[in-house]
Length: 328
Image (cartoon, rainbow, N blue to C red; front, top):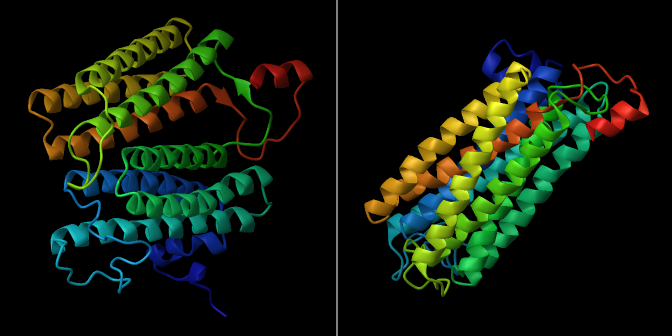
């Protein structure tokens, strides 16, 4: 029987490549998962800035009587369509996640490290979907909305880990830069995560709650925005220091390019942030800022993974205890 993986159309072969995966298609599905999870993070922001957070006022059904959007006297059809569309994106993310898992399970030879990372995707998406129901049932409480974003960020990190691991071997991790430089990379990643937490606090305090019925954090918006800006300056400073250290020590080009790309994204994100602040936080720029935040997070993950190597694909040779300890 002719399988779809033997189809003459390359697009069909690509869509069904999870059934007969190669190292290249496994990495392709992993990258698709990174893009899909970044996409649903941005689509969630679109829901919020358009006031569509309760466009489907119930969960898991869109309305009390229907799984699909139907006319509802208290909800705008546009808002309902936007919120329902965001829920449909979840299924797309789930499909990609399942494709990653099947690819990892059917790889020959099977790599347990990839299987473990791939399992995080359907599990994480299930948690995210259930939490989305909690967001609706709590009428967009800012804490539940903030956690919804942070869960997406953590899931994106798992997807990036799968992408990075699928393109390298299974040898023990070995650093490619000085030990202190790698530590600086880890500090930078923690600082970026702290910046994201501050960002959701600002979001939960300011406008664009997702619906007029949504509550807000009882905090001073100027104070939390100032804290967010201070953390942004810290992240930019750490990134510049890392980039400088990588250049003066002549570290491998992939690490230097990753740090340079991250710095460029951060500076652009800063321009967007200050522009939206001085323009009164327009909805479009808020959505763009969320996209920038997601890219900063992915960029920071890329930097950290670029500071170590596990050798090329197929390499699983053992290293001395000292090398293994240094790579952890």
